[in-house]
Length: 220
Image: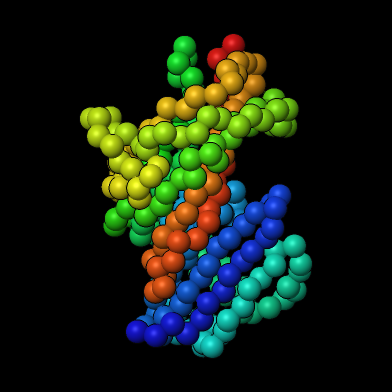
């Protein structure tokens, strides 16, 4: 099995994006999402199958696409986009993040695993930010206190993610209770975190990721 194509989509702050599509000569494609193009709060590796026609188009291609610039009508990028969309339906090792508001307690960050195994990642302890929104527009943001512990399952059991890699099995979830400035309604809150993801590409490097959850309502 030999890699014959790699396409990377990038965009710099404030609209950060980092996705990589790697295609092998056996017709397997892996999509690694570090910061999603569509804004989904998910990281990890997805897979899909490549057709013979798609292999012919992508063979030998090595590209980095700057999403701030138009690439025009490019069959290589169009084919890579098709495979990336198809792969998103087949998680191999991913984690999706959610914000939760616990009345009388505070905010919590949840991560849900999917695929065949856990996505291997660690959060930066000082990276947690809460974004306050009203009517879909951001009105304030606050840095939260440093994360001292990782995700905890309902059992409870420590699942890692801070100080050691996360181990959240497919279909399982873990929660981190957050502390920082109190936030109250009306409005909604979204949580942002950063960290390092170890993906399923051959080099198995640790690359930065960023996710921002969907906003959830605050109690009045």
